[in-house]
Image (cartoon, rainbow, N blue to C red; front, side, top):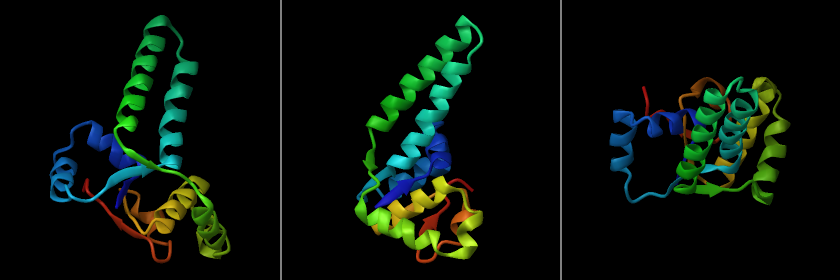
Length: 139
């Protein structure tokens, strides 16, 4: 199973040729994202909607929110479950991972708990997570 981070989802939705080509190569594999990534995407869209300063910005923000919800509905979304919680607790005990953001640790926990591969451009943070398998499909 391949689970997309928000950066790769953005490139997929923008029809990035490399991401689309790589996705075709793994056509038989399950592809999705984590509930944490879904939250990150929707939170940003909601913040943009709430911060919009005029009618045009509000309408555009609403359209982007609607589009993101539609695109996310097409994906498998893997929830943060008890197994992910156990992995999260393990990762939180590793001192060198303190510099990694909480959301990235939550994402890594879901990926590890589901024996999946994270597809991300954020190699710097995830490189530090033991046992985590990840790939960059953009660069």
